[in-house]
Image (cartoon, rainbow, N blue to C red; front, side):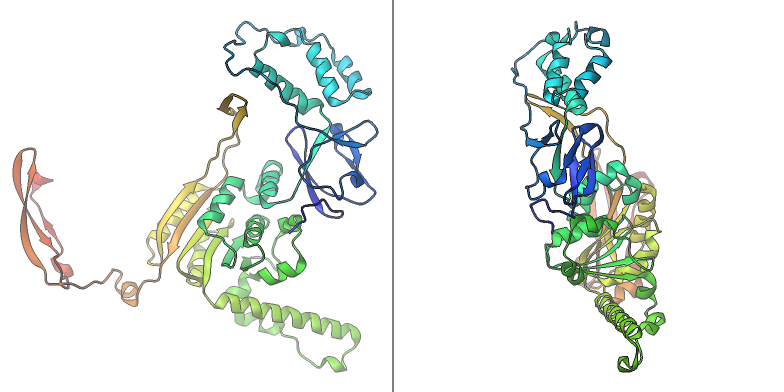
Length: 446
């Protein structure tokens, strides 16, 4: 995994005052342009730990800053009912503010000047002052915070920038998928991931260097674009991550021609390189096929735009008993249709469709309330437990059991003060006769 220290030629996330994030690669002796938030030298943060907040000075130098906090009493009972807050009560014009931004003043000094020019600022409650200052910080501060690329941070970044790329997968839903599938170090997992490799990346991160992930994909090469952002070591990926396309997995005999043939001793250098490259590819393919054919995966995770039923019908036998099958889709109707298919099978127990929603809250000292605006969606998750029924269940379509003989008994039931006789067949043991399974009731008892 990526080091705890910022390194050159590695991906990094920068959180800006606007709460947006910028994903980039730091280069030695280069400058980083953050638009209106300023420009700084990359060498000033290379070799430093993640998490510090830096302010960009006028000479492109950086200094570490602490988060500004307002102090106020939580017992305040005033309100903004009589406060008139409009642009006319700001003595500074837009030209004045632009002049402040292009001058020698730093972000905090600009904010203080804007506050002094606001005639209604003192009329605000302390809570309103806190929110007002926060808005000005997002607008005028020239700060940033380097963040370590993790599956959590990357998922949040792409959900805000390009949610279609990750199939609208929210970070809360991603966490639920990992928990439902019981992802743990040393596990063996079968994955179909069309979310640019986000789910595969999160699984590899949680494995902690021990385990196996076999990814199935529809193209010649898998789309694992997000994996590169977490800076896994190449030998770690080779040891943990395997992949097969659907043709290799479902029709293995049609790929036997991939095996390298000939005598490399008689080949030219270029032919010999091609021979060894093809031989390595075939060896790797054989390893992937062996892992797939073992049929002892600890979980099956599917996130794809294809019909999940087509994949489940082929991949369910690869999963061990009492293991979890997880299917993600941005559309609820797709999973409801899939859950109906699961219920008709004898190999998947208790299919359940879940929607994960984690509402954001505005939290300041002494007061908390949910944010009024939030992004809808985030996807749906279908979970089920893989079971291994006995042959008789598959053949007869029912559960077979044994016990003592069937006897008929009578019971009475007091309903609305009136005793009514119900004749029923009751099992007290013995091997049942399915033809005698009935409950005799009268019309007035229904």
